[in-house]
Amino acid sequence: MTLLNFLNYYASMDDDLKALEQKLSQLISLCEDLRKQNAQLRLDLKATQSDSRLLKANMAQASERIEALMESLP
Image 1 (cartoon, rainbow, N blue to C red):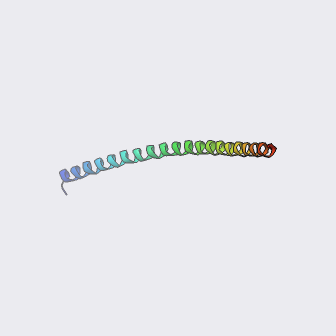
Image 2: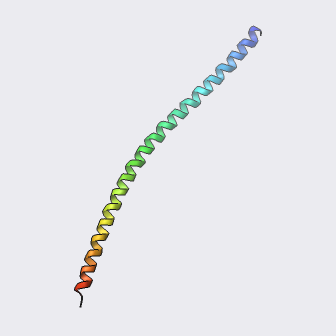
Image 3: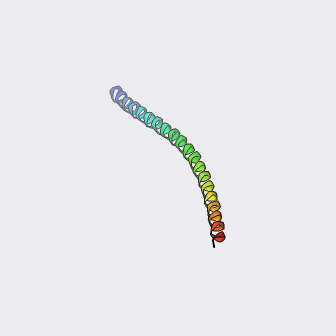
């Protein structure tokens, strides 16, 4: 292998490594973004589940009141 061939090979390999480094950087950034989104989705899910429990309790309470009113009707 001549010096010129070696330098061309080295430059090509260096370009490949730079491209790989850029792709890895993008992947790391994407993973960080997805982790943040996942954490927010977990918080949103907990809030929604809490709201759902409250609404179910309100519905049960309303049903009990309606039943009590219906029983009091002649």
